[in-house]
Image (cartoon, rainbow, N blue to C red; front, side, top):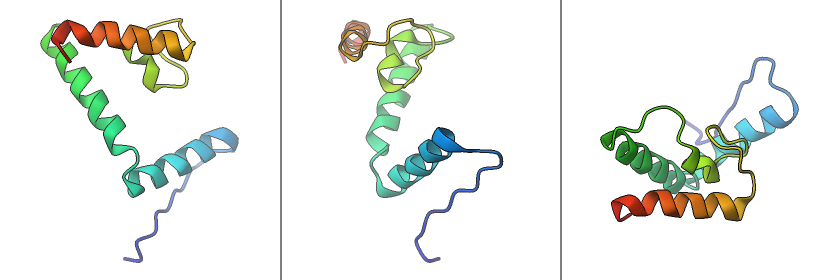
Length: 89
């Protein structure tokens, strides 16, 4: 292995290809690990609490969030903090 990260996208162009390529590089470099761990922990807590489907409070982590119409970053962060404090997180 050469230690290089490769991405092959069939039909991927423009922002999709760029996002996938940068995402793969971030994962390889360890930059995405904390985000993935946060999402896994929040999803686990939500599952344990019986929450199913789209978790709008996690919109803070995504460019185009599902489960909420809120797109202002500060408002998304407030929603996440309020949602997470229910479990003392």
